[in-house]
Amino acid sequence: MMVIMKPGHSPQEFDAVMARIREVGLDGHPIVGVERTVIGVVGLDREHPELADDLEVMDGVESTVPISSPFKLCSREFRKHDTIVDVRGVKVGEGTVTVIAGPCAVESPEQVMLAAHAVKARGASMLRGGAFKPRTSPYSFRGMEVEGLKILAAARDETGLPVVTEVMSERSVDAVAQYADVLQVGTRNAQNFFLLEEVARTNKPILLKRGMSSSMQEWLLAAEYILAQGNPNVIMCERGIRTFETAARNTMDINAVPLIKELSHLPIVADPSHGTGKRRLVEPVALGMVAAGADGLILEVHPSPDHALSDGAQSLDFDMFESVMGNVAKVAAAVGKRIESSVPA
Image 1 (cartoon, rainbow, N blue to C red):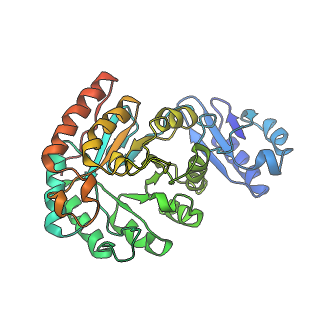
Image 2: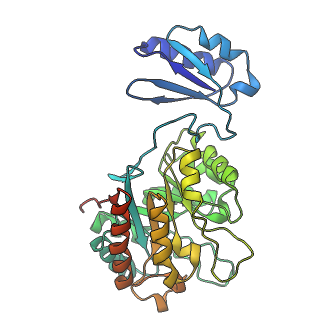
Image 3: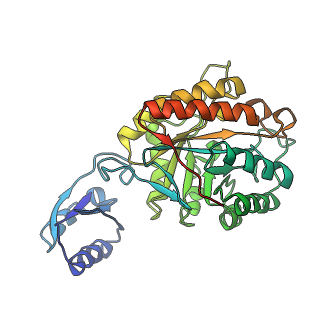
């Protein structure tokens, strides 16, 4: 349910409405616009249908409107305008293409620093890198953990690039939040609802990857867990889904970009590195996702992909990344966008 306040309502009238909502054990989620203030109330339709009538006659309230989507706070019904996520001055979702780039896994200070300077020089505005690595085999390299987080933070301090890195479990949330600017929830944890609530409480931006087999509704309901904790800064990330096809690592779903934009106000970026698993496919798929309207790309870039400890087959070297960035800029311009600028160090 949405409670739409009248233009020019007083702070006292707003506080009274919020207090009435809390009286019945529900939470109000206000969005303050230029002309209107809207309060989203999850559970009102189902648990307290009579409250809508009570709220509608309160001073300062214009009307109440039901939300039909199962995902309430994520929906276009709740918020008509696009959400823009601000990460230390880098914007995601404001009509630009934000490029997040860096190695799959943190391997050494030298490797990360070299990659950070290289991707920034070629137009990336955020640095990605895995300190905690989810691996199918328990015998594969699983990351440098907290030491890796410190390396990423040092690279941010030197280059000015905000850091995006994955959270693997509830027990690592505090450590990751201490060093990272964006907490990534990977495909294996996309429906780990306890973890989603825990990362939400950090109040840091969350990059939510699509589950391996998640439908649009399941993916958006996962985002709803984060928004319901009062954290509005969610970036959706399409990274391919599991299908019968084996020619590529995953099946990259280009439909996801326009569909998410139709259903939700949240920004969406694409990960063609994990989506394809093959570096020769990264550029054409990246261009297709930008043409479809993606707000950004997340790309794996390594100083020496053939020697990478994780996902070398899908990682770009610096020359390949430069080529991708040049062509992404052309496609972005063709659809009325530009590449988001990085923040100076």
